[in-house]
Length: 79
Length: 333
Image (cartoon, each protein chain N blue to C red):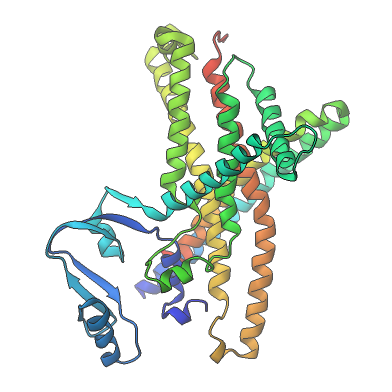
């Protein structure tokens, strides 16, 4: 019984980790991309300057949920 | 499963692939265990006797009790625990130095055989890379003059990129043959080892502190961490905020790179663990699973190329940003 509860807890915990990571990353990437499009629409000549910054931001946004997904897999299969 | 041929369960397979090859000191009286090959008890006992002159424990392992202190390769978890802090991750050191040498070899060669009239393809590629890094540094590093920053950014970018690219090598390609010749663990991606990313981040942090103090003067540096953001009357609060802000830099730098690559590697491993390698017991369903595994690996690898390059770029970019912060002289708040 106790083992079953622990096993179930792993899946619930990993599910939360996947889900919250997806929500956070989705919101973050969405806001970032929409702002990029807005800025380029307003000032198209700035596109070359905006794009590296955008990729930097995407990388930063992408990193944290990726870590969460990796740790969730760790919790599920290894720990 | 890929693990079946080596007699491991799925979990043991994952743990095996996530463990570095550690070289450290073992105390006298410590009991070492080795995995015994063979089908029956007699075969296993004979394997232990012949090869290593050890006893067979009747279940899975040969065992040996050390009669004196010494430096050994860790073979399992009990070895690792006995080694403690002073142990070296041989595989991380080896692969990072190897990739660093490859990087230097190509760049030095291209620099020596430089030609304006007849550039080789390698030279053009390297020029492209230098142009790219040069553009980033010129765009970001504006606070001062320092001829160290651009070469450092180039080194970090290419080196981290090469180390990350090892992630695209199939997960069993190098560790499996290595195990056949007696290397117990092997992790081929140096950046999936927190020790390496933390070392890189610490080096950047030390340079940040050095250039801060050099450019602002010691008094100026103390002022910059005590007198703002709240003004001189809130000195403890200022110090608290600034110190946390400062420590967060190397920490986030190290953990971001490590976490991304570790997660990517983990997903490759999970896909690889699904695939059947034992051809004798291969069924129709097994073939389907294999194909699914290959497809998934391919899709993830293609997606992972983005992460690999992006993380190398971000590490470089943030290094340049921190260097820029270290060179800012007059801060207005």
